Structure formats: C-alpha cells, structure tokens
Length: 399
Image (tube, rainbow, N blue to C red; front, side):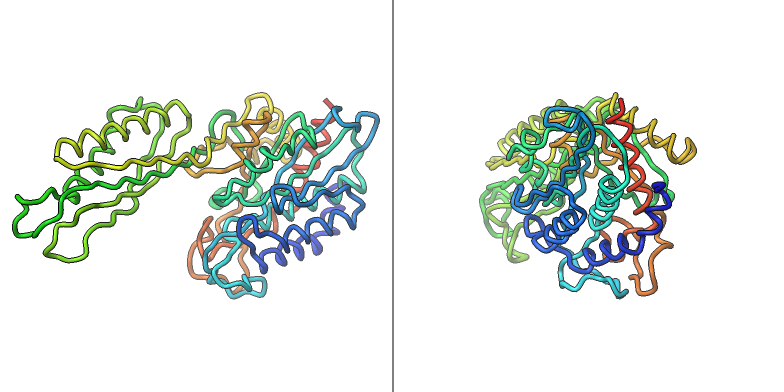
C-alpha cells in the first residue's frame, strides 16, 4: 500500500496514541506508562522490542533483506518521550490529567510520529538493512541520550548514522528545516557565592558589601560576550537569579548568583568559563571579598554532520518539494540529542508546527510556543514526520 494512503487511513490511531500520551505526561526517567504504551504498540505490530534502556527507554528493531544482520546497513531514528514539570492551562479533552506535568514541548508528537513510521516500515516498506527505533527518556534536563549512549545502546544496536526531529512553532506547518553545523547551543549553569562582611546598612564603611560586588560582576560578565568572544561567534551569559539579604537595614554577609551560559562551540565555552572564573575572583579580590565559583556543563552543542544533513535535505526535497525545505536557523536552546551526535554522525531537523491555529477549543490564552502552558502539538504533522522517517530510512539503506 502507498505510504501516504496508509498513513491517512491510520491517522485516527496515531492521533489517539498522541493524545493519550499527552493526557498522561511523565517526567524524566519516570516515563513508565509512556514506555509501556510504546513497547506494547511495537510488540503488537510484531516489532522486536527492548525495554529498560537508560531506565525507561525503549528500542525497536526492524530488520529486512540480506543486509539485516548485526553490523550490516543500519540507521537510527530517535524520539523523546518525557514531559515538563509545568502546569497546563488547556482544557480540551486530551489536556494533562496530572497537575504540574505537561507535554509542553511536543515529545508526545515526536513519539507518535516515530510509532507511525514504525507501523509502515514493519508492515509495508521494502528495504535492505536494519532500522533502529530509539524512544529516549529524559530529554528535559535529565540527559537521557547521554545515559543511553553510556549504557552502550549503539553497541547493542549498531547504526551507521542517527537522526532526530523536533516540532518548531512559528515555522509554517509542514515545513522542514535542516542545516549542517551547530543548530542548537550547549547548555551550562553557574553558581557564584560572593562572601563579604555583613554590617549595618547605615555604616557601610565597616562592611564589605557583596551586593555591590554582585552588581559589578553582572555588568562585567556582559563584556565577556561583547569584548572577549569573537564577534562572529555566538554566546549568551544570563544571570537569572540573585539572592541576598534579609532586612532593609542590614548589609548581608553573602550574595549568590546563578544563571546559564550558551554557546555553539566547546572552544567558545572554554573561553567564556575561564573568563567568568578569572573575573569573579579578581573583582571580588579588588573589593576585599571572596568567591566560590561553580560551573556545570549540561548539554553540549548539537552539531549536524555535513554529509548526513545534506542527505536528509535531499530526501526532504524529493518527498515534500524544495519549497517546503528551508535553512535551519540556529537557536540558543539546547538538546541532548547532541550526545548521540557525538557518538554517531547524523542530523537533527525541525518540522514546522504552525502558529497555533490547529489548537482545539479549550486551549489556553497564551501562544502555542514550546514550554508555554497553552502549547499543543499539531496532529497534522504526524503523517509529515512519519513520511520523512520512512523515506529517509529507505533511502539511507538503499545507498
């Protein structure tokens, strides 16, 4: 049966799966119900299924043809499964049934798209090789991709390359975007405790005010981006929390700053971290204060391999037409698919989610943006994503 016809006939089932997952969101490494739904669905279609990978991850394996043995032609397709710790304000029928948990980033849709592709690949597609379906837990800060790689997922299920997609609000519905090089930034956190000397606010000469030092430091950090980082290299330093003091007439002993750093390369990240560290200690010393400096590297930058990205773009253009395929504008958001791209070459693409007009009656008053309590995945993307996965896998294995 033709791919488009098959997907349209089965749309009701795919939409039902997506909305069921949306209504039952689960946080990082706790995707027990979601993983069970995925595993049971794959198993019901006769697909080889493995569970308990990186705690709640699921891997499906579809082998066909003479090159289907381990170590032969293979491709990895990845979807993330976890939700966000946020309150949904939508009231339509498939809104979250768990207070404080929401599929506010579309991982429910990513999972359903890959399941739809698995359905066709298993039952109707002809290809020669192995398709590895990677249903990953804990993308939202848990580093599920890192854990899957560390547990040896690519040793157990070898792939020549790995591919991922993310829905993208604001990009026209059904439009696809892919570009080589860095497309999402590294994600890093810092915590600085400035230790001064407390005293009476009316007698500041007897104290060392850590709040004044903190204010100087926040301003100083901005010069790292504007005066130390090469202008053509992107970097963001955002101080997002400052905690100090308990009374209006007391200069506190200490002041704590926290925030995030984003870069598109590890070289720039090394430079920014070192300059922040040096500036913190030097500035505090100049004011007679001391500092504790902590810097935590979370996700590395997501960097698309040139050859695999060009291959993916050619598939997109052939299947959907050149007008539907656009350059991928890099974003300072982060994505732990980066860990899979460190282990294997591949491409992380965007699929346009539209501007929110698809949302049913009962959506919240806010925009349909990622991590917004009014967000909802656009079900019209399910056959788009599934077609891309199927055609990409067939083309890759036919090389």
